Length: 462
Image (tube, rainbow, N blue to C red):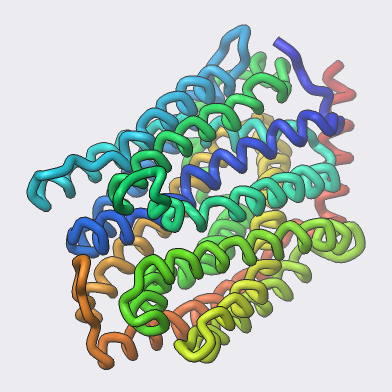
């Protein structure tokens, strides 16, 4: 097995690793795009149940992630600690993804709901087997903080490239060549998406290199390592900032379909599917343009300063949705996405760069490389929070009084409640995220000190 040189990473490795983020975006984003329109609006399943069917597997993932990370950190093989898990996980994830969008026809709503629940549970479990070791691999590819930021910038671009495609998934399900309606069309989308997941997800397995030296370290105890992770202050802060930065948006993001379909387009699902495609593509294109600029800023300014400024920009973009999601000019809504996009992609770049820094901070304290465990605990916290957001979003839609089904009509009172929630909740939560970010302690100066100490330690051990 090939090994990497600490601090060094080739461009082709960066590109291969970034392909894995394309895979992750396909895994995560299309679920958000397709679940409610297909299973709720298309098949008439209660949106609260769909929210439950998405959130329960994420909670299950949150429980299993630390064990996957623990086993990956302590796994020993000639193929490395990460890649055997990644290969098995990505193949299974691609297969279950295709099944996820092939719901049974002619069955009652209970059967369809249970089908979606079981397949989504299997899909997210397979995805976790891939993604937890994948994140751990990324955290140990290089020890250079600046190269880590560059790697995360590559990843951000690939996330954004996927973002150009995934918002169109629902619109593509209406393509006549794929079927007579969106329920038939989405089956083809599932096969295409599953194939892309397998192809792009395999590239990091084939090209990226692992550190052999980490396989010689002693194995560590699971519960002790878990406790240490939760006691690591920089780690707790970065998790909190990431969750709060996105929680409010995820909580109300499914409402965009309802606000758009019933407020801006008077029940025209196809028109809203087209707008949603443009919203997502504008978001992604802005992210691609902004990513190199964010990397340039990181070279000269503290990451924390850039992150706070980015969150303020997201706040403005989210609050503007009250005025920009309007039936008189529905495509004005793109402006709010363009405003929010650079801030969100900056959040991704900086938080994942911070996570690698935290792993070095932990290595300094413990003498162990535990990237897998930290990646998994990070996944546990984030996924539990996001599962809660998704579950609550389904409840919010139900409480708002939304009618579901092919020809449903919403009252003005329901639409007003949806619009208020859609525009007000995210800014409130983002303000809290900014307050928490202020306390992050691993500055550029502190990380330089940590790197020098680690280099001295490794030199002395030779």
